[in-house]
Amino acid sequence: MEKSEKEIISVTDGGYDGQDNIALAKEKNVRLATTALIGKEAPDALADFEFNEEARAC
Image 1 (cartoon, rainbow, N blue to C red):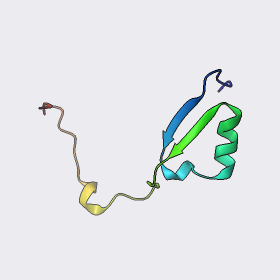
Image 2: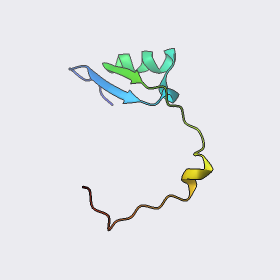
Image 3: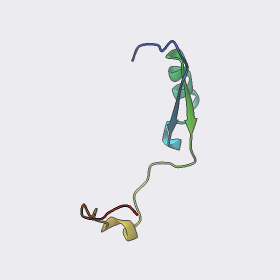
Image 4: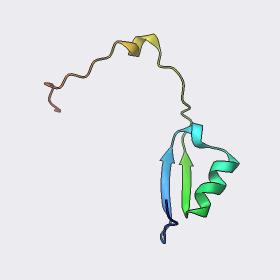
């Protein structure tokens, strides 16, 4: 991406934390706000989840 004139704040999972990523983002005027979440396998309890397209939001 081109360098942004305005600062962009990008909220990402913890997998994007680190000095190299922070420096690369800063070059594009992007500030990384990382969470404590890191990429890992989903627990078996979530493996069989299916999205119900007929469900409605309440």
